[in-house]
Length: 399
Image (cartoon, rainbow, N blue to C red; front, side, top):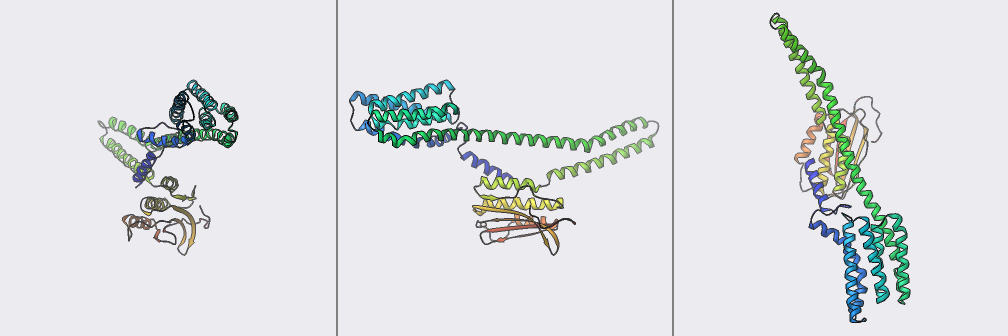
C-alpha cells in the first residue's frame, strides 16, 4: 500500500510543471510555454496598428520586422529563464535591445505600441538582479510615459502606468519565490540524506553492540577449543558447547533487533499521512509529535497500521476533499486507551462490507488488546482504533 501511494505521488509530481527546473520533454516544455503565451495579449494593439494601413509600406515592413525581433527575443529570454538561463552578458544585451526596440517603435509608430513596455518591464524583473531591477523597472515606466507624451497618447500611457510598474516588481517577487522553492527542494533532499546517514550509523552502532562482544567471545573460545582438542577433548567439547550457546543468543538478539527496525512507528506514519493527503489534494488536519507515553510497542504498531490503511482508503477510494486525523487519550470502563480517529468527507469507496484491510486491522488490534470501529459518519467515513495504555498514565491530554 505504501508503495502504491509513493507511485501515485511520483506520477502526480511528474504531471506538474516543475518550478525552477528545465523541461525534461516536449510536453513539459509546452506546459511551460502556456504560462508565457497569455502575456502576448498586449501585442494586439501593435498588430492592429500595422494591419490598419495607417503607415507607409516601408514603415509597415519595418514595424513587422521590429515586432518579430521583439517577440523572438522576449520568448527566448523568458523561456530560457525558466530552466537554463543565459549568462549575465547575454541577458543584458537582450534587455537593452528590447528597450531600444520599444522606444524606437513607440516613438516612430505611435501610442499603439506602448504595450511593448510591459514586456520590457517583465524582462527587467525576471532577468536582472534585484538591485538592478529596482531602478530599471521605474526607468522603463518613465520611458513609456515619455513615448506616450510624444505620440499624444498620454491617456493611454497613464492607463498602462501601473501595469508596467507593478508587473516588473511582481516578477521580482516571483523570482524570489522560485529561488526559495529551489532552495527548499535542495534542503529537503539534504535532510533526507542526513536522515538516511543517521539511520545507517544507528544500525551500525546497534549491530556493533549486539554482535561485537558475541563474535569476540566466539573467536576466543574457538581458539581455546583448538588448543585443547589434542590433549583435553572433554574441555574442548565444553568450549564448543559455550560457542553454540553464545551464537544462539546472538541470533536471538539479531532477530529482536530486526523486529524492532521493521515495527511500524506512529510518528512516521503521521508524517507520511500528511504528505500522502497533501499530494492527493486532500485538505488534511494531522497532529504532530504524538505523546506515546505508556503506549506498548505492539499497541503503537497496531495504530500505525490502522492509520496507514485509513489514509490509503481516503486517497485511493473515498474521493474525499478533506480528512481529519485525531489522536486522543481517553478513560473508558476498561481503563485508559489511546484513540486514533480518521474521518473524511468522501463516499467511503465502492465496497458495501468490510474489506480485507479492515479485517486484518481488526485482527491486529485484537492481538494488541484494542478495538476497531469503522462506518459512515455525518459527513463521510470514520475509522476509530483504540489500544490500551499502560498503568499509571495520566489520561485526558490530547496529542
